[in-house]
Length: 595
Figure: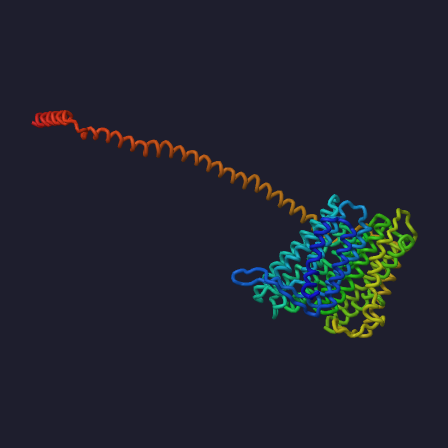
């Protein structure tokens, strides 16, 4: 099979799969098609070089030819591999998790559409296709968040995600247009030089919204109202990674001021996400804020292979955490930590998985998270970003604290009474992600990563390893000391702002409705009625005055005059003699009276 044909297969297969699942809404059909896509994507990645390009003629506009161009560079290939692995595991997990759901066919269609949109976003080189795929990814996210639309919380969360992301999408649209006009090209690979800071910040604003970074971060925890497997795919491993990916895509053509903006936003999000994760009593909301925090870490290291490397490892162990959380929720039928405890006995596989994935989140040895975090620390150290290195150390303490405390509250302590349901099928994708999250794939040495042709290795000083170990000790110790503390509620960033925003939008909508129906519509209807009256009046004038008096009257006068004058030309001799006599008589009368 040719490489170009294989590429088209990878690009189009998710869309074809969505169509087939719509016709045959069976779990086995969907999982088989997902496995086929994942195999094709991984085979393509193993066959393609580091910089694959292809273009097709799309249309012509103003004498300029617009191409549907594609560009599979190293960063796009890495994220595509993540999508291929996680999407298959999520499909496999969903079969058991959503068993018996009457709308599972619609759920699988949404998943395939999302994978198709995400694949297009990663592989396109065209600014137009990129923005179209960006919007499709957001649309699929909206559909999956509101999948259980009979729940008011789900529909409200979907609306919130839509509105907040809309702010970033508008900024991204202006940024991409500015980028194309500045470089006089609509292909990312052809852009050379540095774009103005304002354009760069506008593009990054779109990425900030999509990856739920400060201050547009509160939609992601609410998005946990959607099915847990969908959260693992979209809101932990892939869609939020699209926000980071756009930063990677434009990093080389944006200004140092834009890079500073990325680092500041990332540092704030890294710390604030970790802090809010501590104050959650919902298992999924904790993981949501953890995702915000880890994505902030990627923004801190933007522009380096270390950031991309952490994007890959984080996507795997965070997807695993969500699937393990889904297994726990399926066991106790609750997302609240108040209903959990001692579940290592009821869900031993989920407990072991949570331990491994949590270790990856903390960056413990023998996990991929250890190498990716330490490599990020090396990048920050070698690039002279000492202040961000301090932020990393503080964030690692907070990360170790909240994930260790959550592990204890869920799996340790006394077993709480409650329903239990074993689902062995759910353990298969979890085991696959456990294997993928281990560091054996990266290095056989637990503390040293070998040089890699595809990844830049940043060496760190020995003192940093002591700081890293200290963060683990402090975080785990703090979690043990507060192991029985469960937050009273789920605290959010600016909790009153978004309800007020919704009320403002509702008020504006109602005001617009009143203005349209009571003022605009009445004004339009009044003008239309006036036009009807004027039309009738003009018709009467035309019929009676113009046609009746002016046109009809002049015609009648001409007719009467013609009849009178026609008698002078009757061709009767007696008539002529009579006219002569009358004329002569009148002449005599005139002569007599004038004398």
